[in-house]
Image (cartoon, rainbow, N blue to C red; front, side):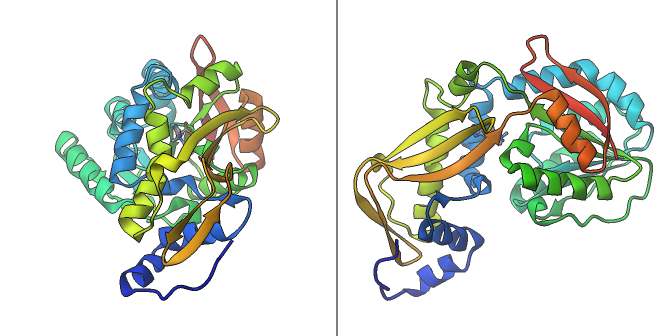
Length: 319
Ligand code: AVJ
């Protein structure tokens, strides 16, 4: 709840002018308190996420890579020559590199990401590795709609790995997929989706023994302290992640250990003991559920690949 209007210093006014500042102050002003997980990914958060991907408990990244290694020849055949790859979120170059190496004369790579810095780095590396590839980074928040330059060559293949789709609510996922189906029409979407499974396995993946996921979650508050001049005491918040089975999603929260207050953008917000800030949903899918969602969004589901333990799935969806 808002308590009083303290005088606002110029740096704080600038903080309140950033999307992160506006969204965090907005999130704290309502209950239940919920903020988009996209704010995890500053430089520190991106680095922590890379460490998560290496954790023994966090199976998605290595499982998806293994699946892609197995099925990439078939994917390359489906994509055909001179394909254009559009990646939503320019995350792991390791994954798209597999495609670029296997495809026949890929013509263009359009990574879309909110972080211009991350994109620029990716572009430099890939241009050196694939001199014939036209790399055109697009700095944009793909959750706010999709606008792409016209396709110039072969088929346009969307690439959305890592089960990032799971960060959307079911309604948002449908809207995103509808937008993707439109910009990819005539081509396809290659989509990675984490599967429902033993809740114990899911729980462990978001509650690792080394506490990297906890640090990743708490970095949201650390980032607010760095960028917005916020006053969060990180020791007084607990990382809490659990599998919500009826909703088929992992939820991550930051739970206040005590009654306390923090200022964000010059505004003071109180936390009751045990009060939570909901920082992430990570939906899990069944193969049939995902295919049905894709169908409703205007795709025609094609082949699906999975690992022997059925932990993770990769879908070819005709647009
Ligand atoms: C990048 C959204 C797929 O939900 O598993 C990892 C993010 N959060 N550990 C996921 C995440 C906590 C990740 N996604």
